[in-house]
Image (cartoon, rainbow, N blue to C red):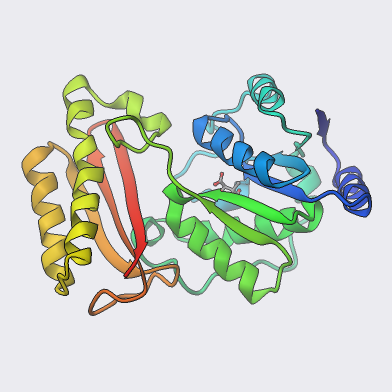
Length: 281
Ligand code: PAF
C-alpha cells in the first residue's frame, strides 16, 4: 500500500492503473476509519481490481459552529487499518494541496438539502459536492462507495454525478448494524447502559413502519405518528425528526409509491442517533 500526498502523483497513478486495464473502486473518507469504512472498502475490493481511498478532512463542509480542528485524526492507525483491509493506495493531501488558492467556482447544491439533517447544516452539502468533484477528477474511479447510513449524502452525490455526467458508478452500501439492529456508530459509546438498551427501538420502529406500508397502509402521516409514538414510549430520546420522502429525490409524497425513505434522528443527552430505511413499493 502506498500513501500519496500530491494531486499530480495521484492522478498519474490512477491514469496508469486505468491504462493497464484495472478497474478502480474508491472510498472517500475523512479518516479516523471505523467498521463502516471497512465495509465500504470490502465492497470495493470484491468488485474492483484496485482499491483507493482518500483521507481528507474537508474544511469546506464544516459550518461555523462545527469544529474543523477538533475533528479526530490518526493517520498511523488509519494506515494500519487500510493496509490490513487490502487498500492499494491512500490519497492523503494537505489542505493547501487541495485548496491552494480561494476557489473561483463552488458547487451550489440546490435540491435534496433542505430536509433531514441538511436543514440544520447550511452549506454543508455544497462543501461535500465541491470536494467530491475534485476527488473524482483526481481518483478517476470506476465505482465510488458511500454508506447508506448517511442516505442524504448518498442522495446529494447521486444528484452531482447525474448533473455533471461524472463517469463514476455510485454504489450505496447498506448500513452496518449491531446484532440487535442498532446502526453502528462511533457515537453509540456515549449512550448510557439504559439508553443502549432502548436504542434498538429506533430501527425496530423503522422496520415496523416499512412493514405497515408493505401491508397496504397509504396514510403516511399515520405511519409517521406510529414511529413517533413507538420511540416516545420505548425510549428516553428526544425526537429531532421522523420523515418519509421519495428517494433519492427527498421530496414530500402524498402516498407510498416508488422508492421511499423513512428517516429519523433522535437525541440522547450525549449522542444524537440517526437511522433510516429505504425500500421500493
Ligand atoms: O462522508 C464523509 O466522510 C465526507 O462527507 C466525504 C464524502 C469524504 C466528503 O468529504
